[in-house]
Image (cartoon, rainbow, N blue to C red; front, side):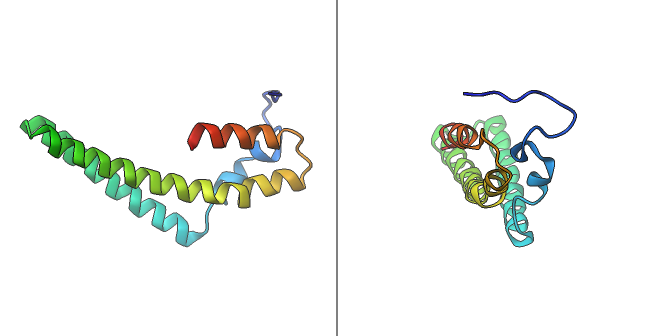
Length: 109
């Protein structure tokens, strides 16, 4: 896989910090933040469960719930990735976009 030189300025559209700011619509961002807040509360609850010595199956059930919540946020971000960031990179003529897309897809799904 080709690599990009590290610079102060974005090397390609995929490295552009503007892409991250616009990765979701306002409604999607609000939904993602709600899901993350819920997951954060669940993680705190799991810590209390472990501290209280709760049964393993109860703890595992809550861990599974947190994983599902994080997967939902990940799916939301991943769904927006091609639309927002990849499209910009392709339109900008980034020759490395395909390598990056494959890396993202194999790493996160």
